[in-house]
Image (cartoon, rainbow, N blue to C red; front, side):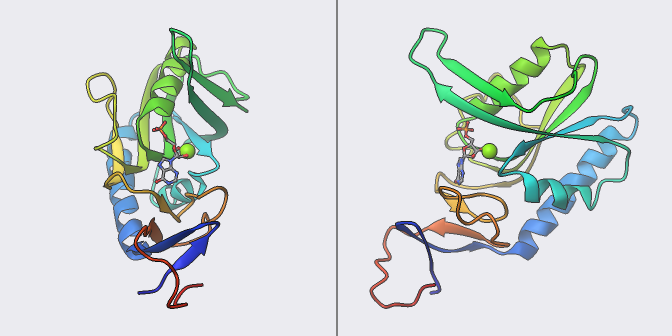
Length: 191
Ligand code: IMP
Ligand code: MG
């Protein structure tokens, strides 16, 4: 089987681009139904990972929206409150706005949980989440936060491609590749 090497890890083919694009189109169709009567929602794209998902979605949405791009990072803090999310680059007020967060992948859910709460605290009228990939086995907020739109569920494995990276490599790949811990590269069949 074909493999690629990114830094110290080997990855094998996992999900073909055609399949991804079909799932993205389906998500866009749901979003089109739900946002038909919402006045100019704000699409909030989380950089860097969600750029490809966002552009895929927007090829199929059919209503007027505003775009904003932010960077978020979450930490499991050591204090009792525990969780900190930094939001970088949100340059517009969200008060009263209907927000659709566009995220690449939801793993534990911590990043989204903190971002949603922040946006609500700042007075957003509504906040929904659209993610490309969802890891149900890792998700920790089942009882408190709904993921409104997701293109695909995956297992607890680590993936790259379609915007997702392993330490900044792999974002440009059109297909999804998954870590292959059993491959040692000795047959030389990798690039
Ligand atoms: P969470 O806060 O645990 O939900 O983590 C979400 C973030 O972790 C995503 O926005 C990604 O940046 C990163 N992440 C989680 N799983 C993967 C993966 O399989 N590949 C690449 N990045 C991942
Ligand atoms: Mg991300």
